[in-house]
Image 1 (cartoon, helix red, strand yellow):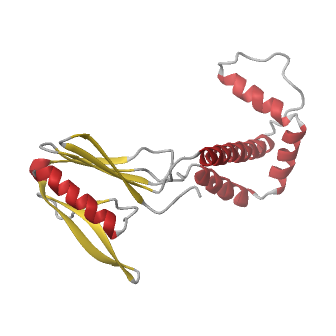
Image 2 (cartoon, rainbow, N blue to C red; image 1 turned 45 degrees about the vertical axis):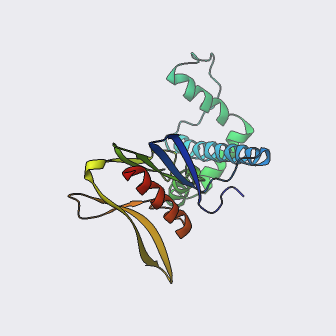
Image 3 (cartoon, rainbow, N blue to C red; image 1 turned 45 degrees about the horizontal axis):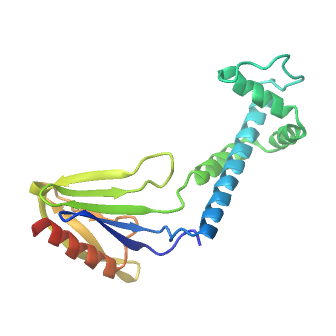
Length: 217
């Protein structure tokens, strides 16, 4: 429900500009907004739980287990306030549970599982790739990153460097996949458009015809 098959969205800001976006993001409805919010909340809770588990193990290994609360709370916008908050959490029943749990899990298992969980939390739900065609200027391709920790990969190719825009075909497993490529002057390899999603032939041909028309007419 959170993702769908890659579909095409077309936007024309001006007669000489067209943007093609292929995405696995479905049309947002009220129920989908609620589901995305619940998913985000779940990720935050799991992430905080993993971090607390790691900090609990750190506190045990460094003999910094809190025996009592601070006399006074430090300034809210200071680094000490973070350690004060963690100290207070470990004094609660929840903190005691995490201390016991972290002590029972071998470090060789705890660290890889914790890192894998944190990486999974930051994975993007949807993949979005776009092709922006600017007549007289060039083409810009963009691919969203796999995680929220990095930005999208973007490249601009000036019109003078574009030799052609083609539809190629290749085997992927036991099926033939069609993909859009840009032949760039002076480069041995072609630039593949929508490289992660590789949308179906109907979308590829529609984008190819639109891009060619915008570039040359």
